[in-house]
Amino acid sequence: MKKQGLRAIFAVPLLLAIASIIGLVVALTGDGLRDAAAWVALAIPVCAVGWAMRARRT
Image 1: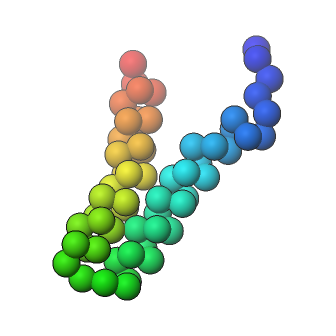
Image 2: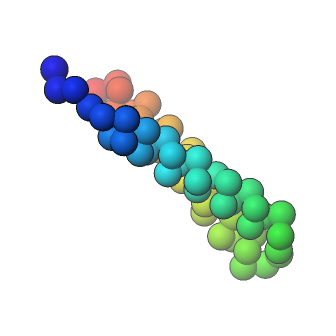
């Protein structure tokens, strides 16, 4: 089994956390186009979980 470094292990969770934080901040700071951007940013972690669950089944 290949040994992975900390950077490889925590890269995706860190990106998902950053997307969530950006989405929450954008949602709290504006309306209109910012709301749409917040929905997109907050949908990224949800889609990642769905993808991981589907990949796990196969």
